[in-house]
Length: 377
Image (cartoon, rainbow, N blue to C red):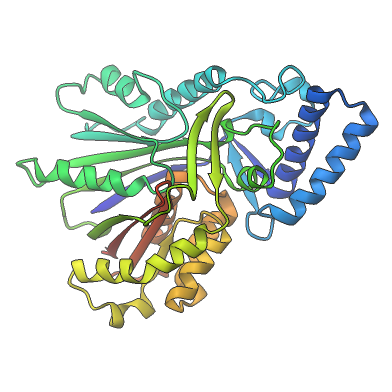
């Protein structure tokens, strides 16, 4: 059972229109540093780039707001820039400086999210693909609380947007090994995507990527049954799509991490979806033909076209995708933290009645198709 969802909005929140304007301005300032543009040339470059972003990026109609842990994302003046001080370096600060911010933010988030939590979980699974430091925030929390003899820590790192599903597999296995039926595994996602822009790279692909991603922080528990409400996990599966390894990547660079995203990703996913979802229903012993038309769909919104692809394959009504669209619109793509935000909404929504089946899907490097079937209890 998935329950006890706790999500936190990043401290700085920006309307998408302002975010895209900041992106164009920062790229132009980076180019001015790189090649020595004067003010008039820099302004002209910014205007051209803003026009390109308006054509290719994910605009305000799909994403209304995005959150960040960085104050400079909202700054009008370059004086406030630390990570993105492109007047010093066109690519912004190096990976070491970005990792230091990640470490500090994650450390504080673990303290905050466990404030008032007195009962130690049997395990904490820390999920992220946007920064690494040892000891991790989870390990520091366990050490500070004196939970070390009871609570194990597992790191589920660098899998990308689909990582909530491997984390659920780990949690399930952990609970099966416990002699008691009252075990609890906590999963904590700390995705700080805004640390990984490189304003010196102006390719269309990077402008699209930089218009999508945002920061997400959340925690929830996986427990062995019980009578209280939650999302019952019925089946999990994962496939790496044939001959698709080059379709998506997420790799370290000198200025944070860099994503590549091929244009054919929605088409590749579309081709694999039907059999994959029907296998989930079959594994759970549920009739897919009877339930698909009334199931809710929690789809990781890699972008609007991904949600559209799932809708079209299964001839879904928009009402079946309400929470997936809403989380993309209100938060952007928060990598692995996105699906738990959607699950949380479905868990709390009075419109999703008990007994509703939830088909949940996510995609990431590999090209990996991962998913689960749940039922609201």
